[in-house]
Amino acid sequence: MLLAWLAVVAGLALLVWSADKFVEGASVTAQYAGMSPLLIGMVIIGFGTSAPEMVVSAIASLQGNPSLALGNAYGSNITNIGLVIGLVAIIAPIRVQSRILTKELPLLLAVTVLGGYQLIDGSLSRLDAFILLLVFFGIMGWSILQGRQKPADSLKAGYLKEIDSHPMTLTRAITWLLIGLVLLVISSRLLVWGAVIIAQGFGVSDLIIGLTVVAIGTSLPELASSLVAIRKNEHELALGNVLGSGLFNTLAVVGIAAGIHPLTVDPEVLYRDWVVMAALTVVLLILGIGWRGRQGRINRIEGGALLIAYFGYTGYLVSLVLS
Image 1 (cartoon, rainbow, N blue to C red):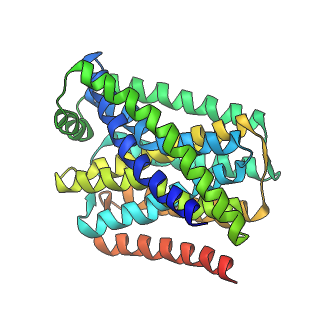
Image 2 (spheres, rainbow, N blue to C red):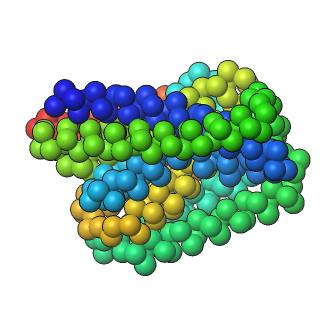
Image 3 (cartoon, rainbow, N blue to C red):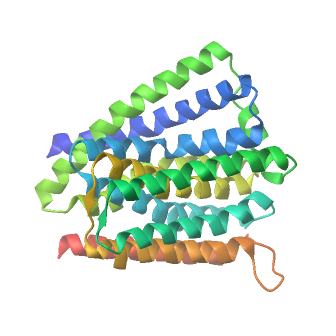
């Protein structure tokens, strides 16, 4: 059991480091290829911060643990909204000025509803996976089109600063891209192995482990990048990272996992975990877009409420394990 815990800790640490290097390498490589800063931020950085969830879920499905994959995806969304956005808003309130973010917020809610609809029959089939991936690529195409049509945006300026903060040669960028990708796979395999052993040792379901330990671990890149963003006074980047990650998790991560290994979904996933994820998404939508003439803004009190909701949910899951 000790070896399994060491594998989880080492896997998480290596996962966060390799994801960071992968994002750096991919961003600079895309810049050399002529991609705009906005597209690099929305597509490359969005993919990079969700790379841990993607690789971990894919490996979990390949090894016959699809519930761990689903728990990782949904748990990461809950962690990103409740923990990451909540913590960021407490440190520095987030003012939403980007037109792109105000369009992605309803989009995230829509794909969350789609995910819940697919859970009603208690399973995720390969057809469900195909639909999720089809919607995912459609959204990516829409994002690219939006980025080209409306290049002047507050989010673009933030991404430009972020990309310029990592100057390097093309050769070095490609090297870090490849090293980061390889280490992502290795660290993910290590993490999944350790998590499964721990779950079996304590008699805990793969789903609960995915919703808690693995979800928190794979959300560390979003937390790290968001804390860096607010330190640079680029608050919208934090929200942009979470929205991009949420779309990737709900569509691509779940789609890849179910495509590899269709799974039977326990009823509590829909009535407990999905409901929490959907409720947090609705709250984020209301706060981000604003209402009754109020500009979209997440203040410290609202951030604290998100944190309380997150810890309340996580505490409930822990109580299930201890009972």
